[in-house]
Image (tube, rainbow, N blue to C red; front, side):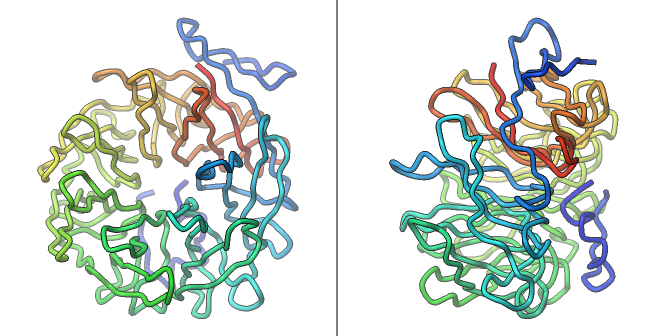
Length: 396
């Protein structure tokens, strides 16, 4: 399962080829994957179709005094085309639908948002839809503060300027919104673009050719050296994808995966200790995915740790570095039930902490967030009471 496979009806049009026990208590708490870790998982929200379905993106905590959590579902809602929602504190069990997406027409154009929302310094929420918009190839939108119930389409993808954005937006050094499209562009292999948050003008910054990578599914990372970094899920020297560096001037340098050091990365990178860390869906010692790193400034990805199925498999989400100094993440498969895990990375060791079982969620594809109280929140794309996904809280 990955972000593009959810939309197989668009694969021919877009020519995307992406490589694709623990007892639950009545309170929805789950015993730890290993008893040595006091880890619990609580289901916060079950999606039922009406309130959304299949959340592929994680949740976002509001800036400033806004303690709500915000997110999107890739399906469900009144039109079946996805929603944007908020969860109110302190328990985050109350869901309010902000937007029902309406496809290629209507008030809230866009379909299937799989990218996480992003709150810019201006307080507005920004996002992207994978399809929908005027050309049914995706869009960039704004939800106006403070209610976030009014949607403005900033840009529509046409194919020439990119198509099918899957990674969240970031603010670049120039104040524009920067992102990636997984297809489209001159070679139909994806682009890096920027959009003015005020005028909606879209500029293609770089185009993927296959040799320098193809089909990016993750957001950019603006690193401390002033360069942008990211991953592509295919392309490169062996077709296994690349890590790339993009200078502010638009010069793109790829560093290829070989399979042994990872393959088919769909995750964003995070910076820590002079390195950029990420995950790959395949590759590594068991071809079940890997954690890798590259030095700041660029370089060939180096294997940090491999997934083996028991500790998780096929991660599509980025790592986060928690307040205790360890890395945490989700793997979309593997674990006791092959429905995904939450894992901890310490040094070169991946330890599964929570195993999803369907009732408490399945197929987590999103990056975790950690709140100031130490609790983690995330989404599972499937599972829960309707098998349409969940929002969960994870505590260690």
